[in-house]
Image 1 (cartoon, each protein chain N blue to C red):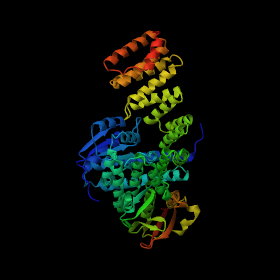
Image 2 (cartoon, rainbow over the protein chains, first blue to last red):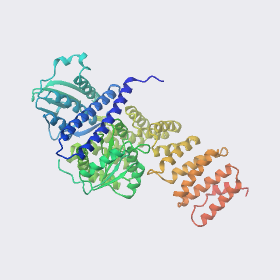
Image 3 (cartoon, rainbow over the protein chains, first blue to last red):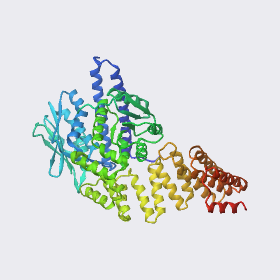
Image 4 (cartoon, rainbow over the protein chains, first blue to last red):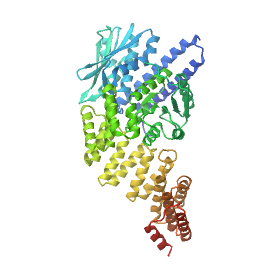
Length: 219
Length: 403
């Protein structure tokens, strides 16, 4: 038998598993519908649902990560009204924040538009928010603004900020955060306009005092 | 966001997996749809679309063995079975998205990734309908084929809704190409490309170059597109066209064969390959392409007599070199039968199938039957059922019959 590339095998295995999570989510939805609204199990089911959704999103992230790292991702950019894009992200992630008693919001100029790959940035923002959910004390805010020729999407929280220990390269793949950052970086890098590449910056949030992951996308 | 009333909207749900189908129908009903029609495959959907109008089509990309949701969209939009005013939402898995993006001329209005919740679906549809509403005048003009009007409407929308700028510019470019205003189209695509390498603009630029006769420039763009995105199969079609125009039909044929390898279910491409192969006298390839086209055409929007006639013609050309093998004869008779079932009311089609049939009998040295067929044909000419043979045909056949 021809020797196959192990990362390709893993990627397709993840894809299979992701589809199964999808089926589980559908089945869970059916179960939820069949229960009375006041049923005590509703909360438990919602929790399982949120965990499965997170698992699904994480696997999506890994799939994109694989494609970005193996140069197999075809970027598809379009113009978006940032308010709508951020509203979509908050809408999708709100239940996860609520489940942890955290506030999730967005802030941006109502007329701001941006050009980027929607699917990729959706995955990056959700990865960053899931990460912030682990560290935030009370709230997370997603913002968008222009900085020179870059659109900057930032995910800020009021936690303790980035841990310097995670700075070391060795640590990168040890922690979930490191992998998420690597994914964010590759995604930003994939955005190129007029020979300028996108990038990420890890900062402290001026408004909330915690961590702020900024994704710079050339426009 | 305001609540959209879906109760007066008609939805068509196309999904092959029972579980997802039941769930999605329930979702649609739960947020207000009263009318939800269901198709389990693209072929059934086409039949429904021929007889009914829908406001929203929710189609899975992966529809099992038959045509996928993207091919359905392409065919149906191309043949105006689904007007531009109708919202087409594609349901996808992560991995199929780039195939949809690769189909640059006919993209769905939106896509939603599995798994999704009822709230997400409702929200997505509400947004899409809002956008459709904003683009209503643009799409009405587009459907009516009034491209000047389309451009005017698109410019107005762009001014009012900056987030739709990309979409509107794209429509304007398309309209300029339709109006054959190639220099203006080129200017627009150049302007877009100056700020961003948008594939649709690169493709539009290539088409403009093609029509302006700048074939080398067109070729360069198309090759760039093929390099950028291996799923961008329509670039192959245009490169093949460019190669033909440059006088290299053999190269064009190779490009089409490559494209078919990437997307084997596209009827138009099979027809094109058949047509091109006939022109360069590669009858074996022509026969294969037309045979596939006949197979695919049946449940498509391109079910025209010419596909079937093309198949007969390629077999007749093969027979020019000697009698057909039994399998080939079977193929001939099968396609002939299909013509008789669906297209024989057209006198032109009747005449052509008579001539091909006679050719085959002649190749098999069955003079008697060939002669009978010719007499039958002439009889049908009298009743206007078939068009008369051409002068050449009459000469050829009478000579062959030894008359």
